Amino acid sequence: MKLGQMDEVEHRDGIAKRSDVAVLYCDPKGIYPTLVEHWWDEKRDARTYNLTLPIVAHPPCGPWSKFRHMYKGAEHDLAPAAIKQVRLYGGVLEHPAQSKLWQHLDLPLPGQFPDTYGGITVSVDQLHWGHVAHKRTWIYAVGCDEERLYLPYPPFPNRKPTHDLMGGRGRNAQVQRGARLEASKELRRRTPVAFAEWLLELAATAGKVRAA
Image 1 (cartoon, rainbow, N blue to C red):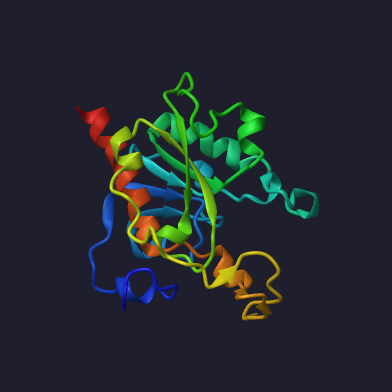
Image 2 (cartoon, rainbow, N blue to C red):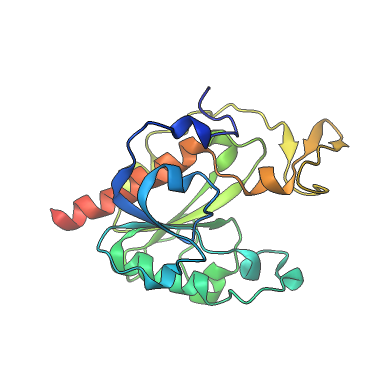
């Protein structure tokens, strides 16, 4: 299987999992449980995390996305809690680009100076790590090696999208829309394995920086 394909979960079988980073608010059916020993999902309640490892946090984006007016859940407190955890333990938080979480908590925007916690934000496109569509993402990082935020360069810088994120009609929808297909909900939510591995490596540098 080539790196970057979307059925990435199966290819991790038999490969040692990382134990130097924890992942919070993750999808139990996603890629992260195949990559790390320590992970917390909704059932385990990531707010109870009490280890000392740096973290990768992926809290629900529904209350903070451009479609938040359609959101019917009750998870508004999870993303702010995740920001506090990233600031406490070091690591990174991933959210869709333009997330209103940044405005709500006055987080630094991409290109701005670090905040009082040393947190900085970078903007990336998961397409360049193997996603099928442009999936623009903001990364809030605290305590990480800043050089690793920009290097190495993404593995697929010239990758062309085969799908569009918006407009999927069901789990397996592949409806022709112009020159590209509409990504299903399943495809939209997936994290490319190369991107997950980069975030884990980035977060791990926070632990090394604190130990130095």
